[in-house]
Image (tube, rainbow, N blue to C red; front, side, top):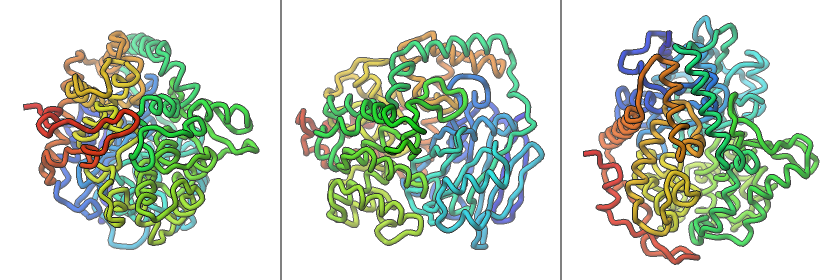
Length: 580
């Protein structure tokens, strides 16, 4: 029943075809990366006519499986120049699956200087002119309301912000969540690619569809129940994330001495309590009003690590107020006020930029003398200017690598030109290997070694030492590539990393849905094949082992408080994803 939708933006031709045999058993990241490797010329310009962008729900998306609402967006990244899978919540993946769509592929680019909306429902696929009022600087929150008024309240939306219209390298794609707030496919500049296709939005309406078919309903129900129990029984996925959100990590990582601060100069900050998850919870609770301590970014989420953050009058500011954003602005850029960070986060959602890339770019700019350290007002103003970019706004939205070059800095925290996220690899060495070797550029979600290095889930490794880290990063990257293919949130790992029954329940759900008999070995092989595919694309795009390295300054600048440096040799790093 599943279909491939292809939209050619040059000719406006639309095709709806059966899924090619090669892709029948794939979903999510496995599908997007395989497709990009098959059909995109590795050496093409990411913003040119030969690049493509693909939306693919995971294997379990659209079912009642807990936490299965994730969507993969695949393309060649204009930020890194390599392959990219960016992952998001919202309603889009589940609605695609209910419509029987395995993938939506957008190809080529129009000659005319205008933006379009691609509209999908049970009767077909259409290309409309984008409403004029959402073009040319309109914030994403207003754009969602305009599109809902035009197409219906229950639509799913993939939305290009003003930054994407200008094809800025840090532009993301925003997705409507169940409450009409925003979630993002953030990393790698996927919004710039959609902007090059002149697609302002993809609107999807699953009205009139039936439930996603399940081959064995009873077995699926039993496995789903066991999987949910595994998630809820674990103290992190069942309690901690719901109470404090992902920002629970601020105090944990600060105490571990791995919280990158002031452009990766230090591993701790004195004002951690100002911006911690505990403070976030207390502030939301105290203010009441529209604030919510826990919230789901997509239907069926039982972890509920998201939240609504309100101002002093109880009025909503932003949701999905994540650790990475709060770290980047609060520790790396030194902004000490949580409200100031919340308003900046809201504005990043409005203009549509990756809050990791842009936050690190701001910290880099502060070291370069462009902005005073900790100046939240200046940061907020520059983010607003990204809607109609001033020169400085363009520079910051170009990403940390560009900022570092223009400021004449050698201390630029990037891998493959993508900003390093919120864990310093000198004092949390497992995540450093993931940053260095993942085909995605620096990306903590590609192999979350924090689990075994800091949280002691799934492994128990000393984060300051090299022992066991190579094998651990490899296994985490393989497992994550497989998990990204199921449509599951990465945080389900907390419920299955130490729980073989929880992991088996995940596999059992896939088997029950499709009438398969996959084993754990089959799932691991899927993850390994995804990584091999991505590495093949990057190799053909011109990448080699020399690109799998952390910034050189980390090799000779000790990080306080532990006084550690990045001490893996090139030969050791090259072992991580050596599948020969």
